[in-house]
Length: 294
Image (cartoon, rainbow, N blue to C red; front, side, top):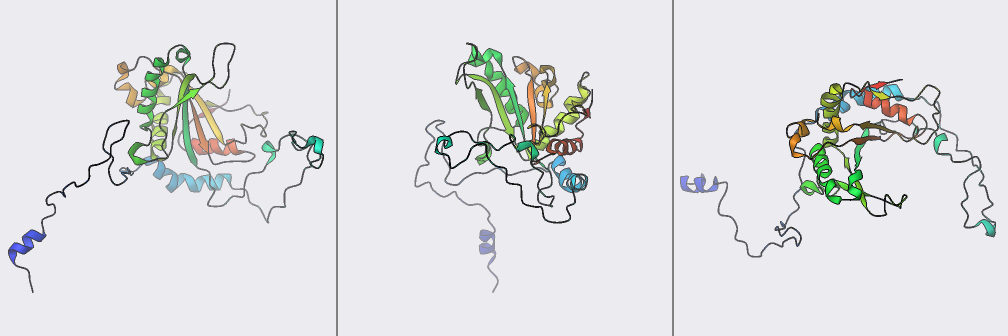
C-alpha cells in the first residue's frame, strides 16, 4: 500500500533536529578544545601522481632491472666462530664479535619476489642550526619551514603514526660547544602520499632551478660495495640554503621566514644486502632524480 504524500515527504527529509547533548564533551587539558566521542581520521582525498606512477610502471621495471635469478634454494649460511669461547666464564660479559669482523657488508640481498620489490619507505629531512645552541628561539623559523615543506604535524588528522617535526638534541658535550640534551636542529619523517608530493616538488621545481647542481654524485668506480653505507639502501643528498626558497610553499611567502635553511635529505628504501644502495639509486632515477660522476 503506497504511503500518503505527507508521510513520503517526511521520510525524505535527510536532516532533522540535532540530538540534544545530554553529556558534556571532555576537553583537552592542554588545548582546552572539546574531544569528540569518535576518532576523527583524515584519509587521502586526492590521487598522488608519483605514487600511481610507481605502482603502474616503476614497480615492474624495477623488479626486471634488479632481479637476480637463483636456480635453487640457498645453502644455509656458514657458521663463523666467535672470537672468544662462549663457555669461558672469563669472557662471558665481553664483546664477542665473529672472527673476521662485522658481517654486515657481506650479507647477500634477500631472494627476489613480487613482495619485496624495491620501494621508497620514507624521506627524512633534517637541518642543523648553530644559533640554536645560544638561543632556542632561532629554531622557530626552521620548524615553520619544515612543517610547510612536509604538510605534516604531530598526529595530524588523527593519524597517530605521524610524529611531525622533532627536535634534534645533543647527546654529549663537544668541547664546551654542544651540551647534552640541548636542541641543535630539527628533523621530520615523511611517509605515504606526502612523501611522493615532496619528491615531485624536489625534482620538478627545485633541482632544475639550481645552476650549480649537476646531479647527485656517484661514488668512484673503485669504491667498495661492502661498506655500511653501500648496504644500507639509503641515498642522501644535501641542499644549500638558497634551494629552500625554490619550493613552491616557501616561494609564495618567503618574506615570512627570517632566513632560509640548508637541509639534508635521506631517501630510505627497503633494499638490504650487497648492492642495496645501487638498487636505491635505480629507483630514484625512475623519479627523474639526476645522478652524475665527477
